[in-house]
Image (cartoon, rainbow, N blue to C red; front, side, top):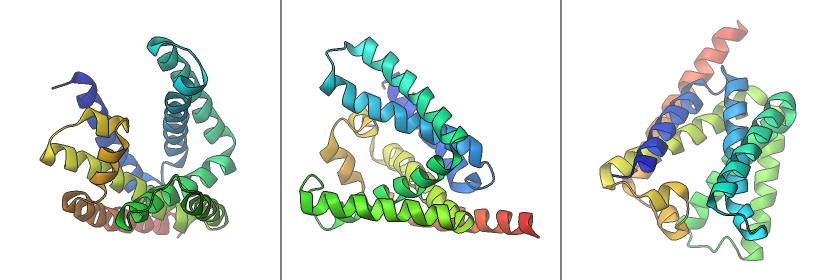
Length: 201
């Protein structure tokens, strides 16, 4: 078994728990982690396309972009909160696109997806308690569902790293993923709303 796959699985498990059940309560930690992951994935996806960096240089530059993303999301709080809604919307759109067999690279799919994600980001800014709870519970449940799917169906590094898009998207159709996602999403949402409700009283 690849050690990198095991590390990614453990990270998925830990981040899934934090996001799913503590997203609203530990908001700055969640924003820091979210910003780091967003910056790292963006760098890892785009740098090989736009530069001639080798693997090590891409990894180091992606780590640097991850740190920049974490700092931005923590210190520019509104930006981080917006992208929690945006990211949650992106996961929902990917799930819908896979369900309806849509190609997300087609403009008539891609542009509505961007508009939906931006709209959900704006809603998250305007009603923080509810939407942060909803989207962090959803993002965390998705990470945990991916963890469960990998454990039950077999660990595939390509799926975890999103290097094989077809394999990664096919996970969204699996019964294991969907059932785990549904159960953990509602559990995480109930826990978060209960905790933040007590905090307000």
